[in-house]
Amino acid sequence: MPQIESVRGWENLDAITNTPGVGAVFLGPIDLSVDMGHGLDIFHPEVEAAMDDMIKRIRKLGKPVGTIALTPDQAKRFVDLGISFIILGGDTAFLTTATDNMFKTYREAIGK
Image 1 (cartoon, rainbow, N blue to C red):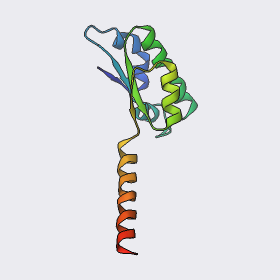
Image 2: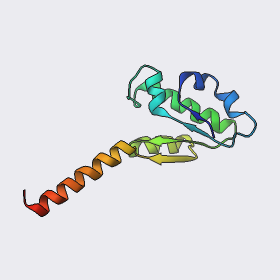
Image 3: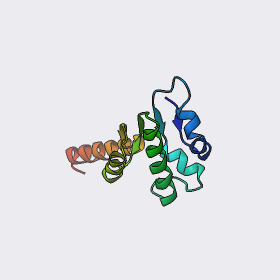
């Protein structure tokens, strides 16, 4: 399962997807956004258009396609496009949320 996360990968999507032995393709929107010059803005319209295009094309080529969604709305959009599998949320968001919750719990227990 190759991961496409660059403009060059997007340009070569058909060849990558049709490579013998490829059973599925994973799309990396964060690195794609950086490669497109939009920093970490995976919601930039150009990044969203690229993701939409790749999902549709990979599905049309008959292969499962997966990616990551950072919000429920983004997950819904990907599901509506026909995504086959999805990672929900990001590791940094999970870590900061868990840390914030732990800090709050301890602070309440200590009373400060």
